Length: 144
Image 1 (spheres, rainbow, N blue to C red):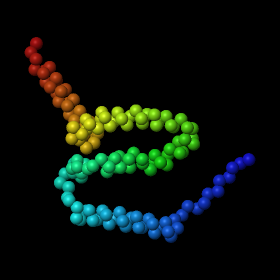
Image 2 (tube, rainbow, N blue to C red; image 1 turned 135 degrees about the vertical axis):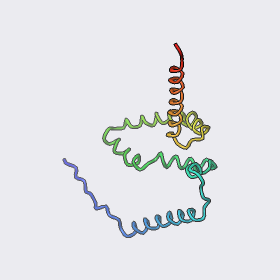
Image 3 (cartoon, one colour; image 1 turned 90 degrees about the horizontal axis):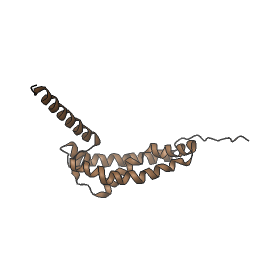
């Protein structure tokens, strides 16, 4: 017995367009208001990190929004349908990785005063080149 799927035409109705336009207008008004009247940022750190003055709630919500992406929400059901329920093992890895990141990596990044992992990588590469240059220079200046 073959299963037939009936696909409806997925099109926006008038009410969908109205709700979409209202949300877009609200977001635009908020952006214009804070763009014209808000405090101007003087550096990228102030822009990206809000001058390191944000409370816990906005930071937690920002992390949650970046963690729960649209790809994750759309892809997880498809992953489970195709490959089965073994996907739940990722939850176990999250229980290990999230505390590890919260208590080991994030405090290090905070103390280094960096805004991204790429800045940490740049610091380590520059340190490596500096040490390598010192060793190479020292080796060439030793008289035998």
